[in-house]
Picture 1 (cartoon, rainbow, N blue to C red):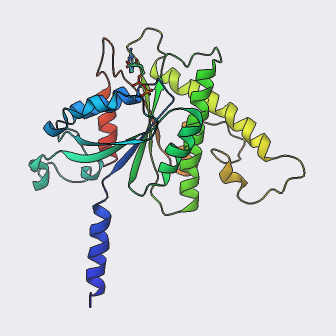
Picture 2 (picture 1 turned 90 degrees about the vertical axis):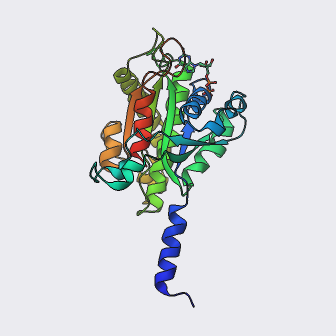
Picture 3 (picture 1 turned 120 degrees about the vertical axis):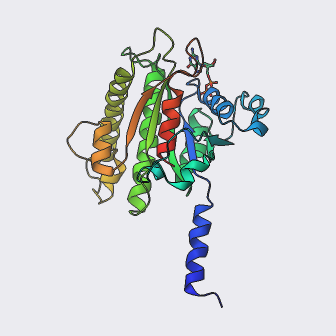
Length: 271
Ligand code: GDP
């Protein structure tokens, strides 16, 4: 009979075999497919070099891309180990998986947000087009905010269901920083926070209709909780332990690859 000790190591082992997974989200046209291709090129996996052609099609369903993170990128799990640590000298690339999802309205809710329950999920990369977030109240800017709002709410709920579940961090990749119409990263952050606050206000009004039971779950149904404080990414970290980083970069264009290493470092920090 297997002893408890065996069982313990068996489950530990099974757990560690789940390849760390990242979910690639964001509205259509933001640059998800381009980013997945670029990361694939940079993943220095010689066998994968022919695979990127397959990624340029418009995806209607989620596709999974196996990637390798360069050994030059520091890993979060190595943070407390000394530089002389033997296994750091091995310098093996770290495997991870990227799930690319369709960005269109109805499809994305099903395909993308259900992935937030994925047990191997280590982080969400939400790509935005930094040129569409001006204050002119465009539909694409609102669409981006609604999508990010829904994503954050799904992550908040995931945590609320399983209190011990790991907190899923979010990278907002402020893409297309090569274009002169792009908002700088700090402004992208502010615009998103302002737009998400609008979504949050209108949705919490909907939840709090007169005569409706205010059940205990209501707080978890509102992004950032039902408090008076305005929505901010900082609030998500304080209230729910969900860290959201906004980092600018460019996948294509004259400055193609700019900032991509920082995105990879963010990925490494989750590994
Ligand atoms: P997806 O719908 O999110 O997968 O977006 P795509 O990867 O298909 O990109 C949409 C369009 O934006 C394509 O024409 C890309 O060439 C372009 N694009 C993506 N990233 C950048 C960028 O950083 N800078 C510029 N100038 N164009 C980009």
